[in-house]
Amino acid sequence: MTFSLPHALAVWRRNAAMYGRTWMYNLLPNFFEPVLYLVAIGLGVGAYVSEMAGMSYAEFLAPGLVCVAAMNGASFEVTYNIYVRLTFDKAYDAMLTTPIGPDEVLAGEVLWAMTRASIYGGCFFLVLVLWGLAPMPSAILALPSILLSGLLFAALGIAFTLRVPSIDLFSFYFTLFLTPLFLFSDVFFPLEERLAGAWLWVAELLPLLHPVRIARCAFRGEFRAIILWDVVYLLGLSTALLWWSRSAVRERLMS
Amino acid sequence: MIVRAQGVSKKFDQHLAVEDLDLEIPHGSCFGLLGPNGAGKTTTLRMIYGATAPTSGCIKVFDIDVAKQPRSVRARLGVTLQHNVMIDVLTPIDNLRVFGRYHLLREPELSKRIDYLVDFLELRSHADMPVINLSGGFQRRLAIAMSLMNDPELLILDEPTTGLDPAVRLALWSKIRDLRTAGTTVLITTHYMDEAQRLCDRVAVMAEGKIIAEGAPSDLIATHLKQEAIEIDCDPSEEKKLLALLPNTARTMRAAGRLVIYVDEATELLSSIDAVSKDDRHSRVIRPTNLEDLFLHLTGTQLEGGA
Ligand SMILES: Nc1ncnc2c1ncn2[C@@H]1O[C@H](COP(=O)(O)OP(=O)(O)OP(=O)(O)O)[C@@H](O)[C@H]1O
Ligand SMILES: [Mg+2]
View 1: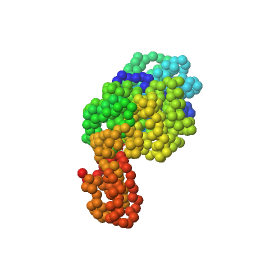
View 2: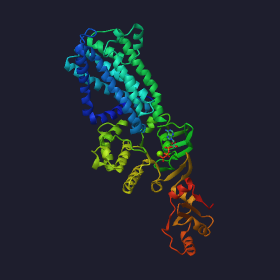
View 3: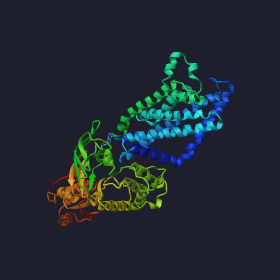
View 4: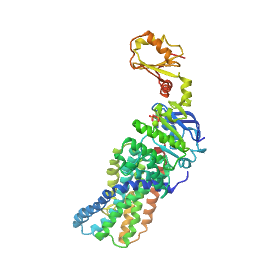
């Protein structure tokens, strides 16, 4: 059966219709969260840091936090929310009575997770612009890194969610996987200055490192060749994970 | 034929849920799939609309191989699942809109179709309330409305009236008859024999994954059981005395203190029962044999005596 984008968009619209009911409650925290981080760490801790990688600490922090916001937006969606749709709501059982197939379900969910990532990341970005921490117009070029973060963390989360036996295990995903990424992916301090050469290669495996690097380059208004590797990594790993998830979606929905 | 299944089996790990099933559902008919819990009814339906693949065998719906082209098959049928699947925080109208989009309906057809179905299933009074606040009967009607969004040629209903009050059941039966009159083919599963008897042209009784009887409800009863059923309260100790009166072709069935006797002609037997024991037998009921008797006869194990 060939893939049908309109049907994938129908899956996307289902989630959008549900989100539309509660967007006010969902959206506001998106604005508060970055403000809290920036005030506490950027300004609070930053007051004791004269400069980091050649800029003020708040300036250093800003682009990484945009990607973290995108990561969180996508991750909540593809872990708890997909699990609930799968096990409790049985939403996919209903979809499979219509022309929607498992591939369209997967694609629709990925697109929706990317949308949530964009809403989170976009709100964060807006706060930075108003704060004056996003140098215009070059910072605009950081926006694609929001989408790429959304794609990658959608793919990672879905691969986990489809195989996780119980909703309780998601706390492991968040505390043992996402939190370390958040802390050690160049967001709070420049990894390159902290790690010895050999370890730097290992650090390249960290998923969050790559969108953060793209965003930081955009904020600085500079181009580095390594960004091409970041894009290849993000697209390559996402594609591989999603391909792997295709069969798992079939197994879960059509057994 | 709208549905034609040949030699269909479905195995879950070691468990054979459906075994070598053959099924033919002609255009415009109402076909009932009966059977106790776990008989394989839902699994059979899921294979028919392509939500799961048979382990072996072939299913054609609208003469299309479901395994090869599930999308074209599902575009033309509607399914009401055993358990309601809807978005609790949205209104019936919004739920219908979401579901209509699964079928790629666009405005203005989408709103037109919703409007029609809201009237058809009498949802108007609560059409703008979140689904979570609606009664079970209302939710079930909405579930059926959702499965009609694409104006299906084949409507599949998995236990549509389980847990509903008698008034709602009566109303739903009449809607299902309306749909049939309009040319929709209906495939229904149910535990209610009266429902099957009222709605279905043909029924198949499933047990442990196999069809053990199939035919028109009245023919099935005629083949397997006598015309009339006498129900009496009767102590197991008295039973011997009573059974001596019975023609040796009669069947009986016991459920706790209640004895059901199946005969062709009830009055004659009744007078001889009265002759044996003059005392008033409590709650004596004479009724026509129904599908429920047949069902218990075929799937229950309490039956004894007779040929
Ligand atoms: N996805 C599945 N994985 C494993 N076993 C399953 C699966 N679906 C159904 N079964 C098993 O297959 C058998 C038939 O189940 P099915 O749901 O088709 O029965 P049913 O006739 O619809 O029963 P009910 O009247 O309770 O709805 C049951 O033993 C059930 O446990
Ligand atoms: Mg069932």
